[in-house]
Image 1 (spheres, rainbow, N blue to C red):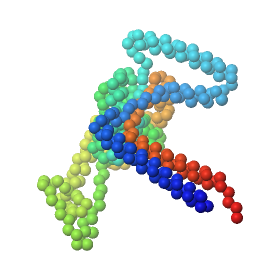
Image 2 (cartoon, rainbow, N blue to C red; image 1 turned 60 degrees about the horizontal axis):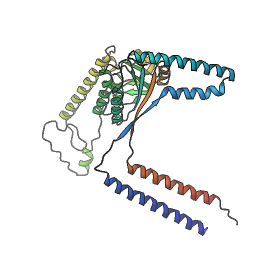
Image 3 (cartoon, one colour; image 1 turned 45 degrees about the vertical axis):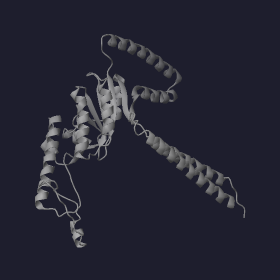
Image 4 (cartoon, rainbow, N blue to C red; image 1 turned 120 degrees about the vertical axis):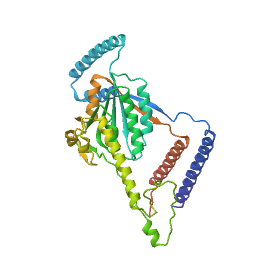
Length: 348
């Protein structure tokens, strides 16, 4: 038992030393690289047609009879040869087979993914033609006005280039998320996806009475009548509340005008109440154009076009990589320790 205790202490020391060395190396290298900033990330492209073919082939090889499988493979080769001839013919005439570019946006309150979205859209616009299409898989319940305003402006760049844009909503596109979605030429949503919430909300606590109770003074000095309207610690006034509500209403009007401009078929006054609707109801309200999932839409697109998923991958810093390496090394040492322990037998 004494041996096990000593072995455990030894492992703890080793882990500590390894982590310390990695942190020191990371700090030194990071300090040396501060003036040499390279690309923040890179674009990765996945050919979805090939992915689907591989998945289909794996199931088909098991499920189909050998003779049927052989005939299907023969038919596919014949079709592939025909498609190649057609593609060459189209390219000689100056065209190309339709391409569909797929991007994804998973939104948080700050629309943090807008930086990746910008890079993805920029890369697509450098090659996409008017006969192509962009599909955005969107999932967001909204957040800050200015960040989602920027996100919708990035999406608008696609439409400004007259490239068809389809937005698929499998889960939610509400508030700022719907601000992004309404830009599209076509919105497709799953039957129980959540859409709408065309409204503006702001809330904050006020601790002024608590401070007064404990004899704490709070001084707030501003230059400009409305530099501050409502505060966390100061005493809010009716005039300040009135101005704050005026700003909220103005933001709401801007939101409504934006949606109305993007979707003229929509009765904005009817839906701009802050309410949300499931996909089936949203179709009745004309918040969307079709019911369906992104999976079905992309599988259908693969039959008619070359479909490419475009992803911007952020480059991990050296410190992040070293941290992951240290964590993995620690996990391996601890696992080895427990494996050794499991090999010991104790007798009374």
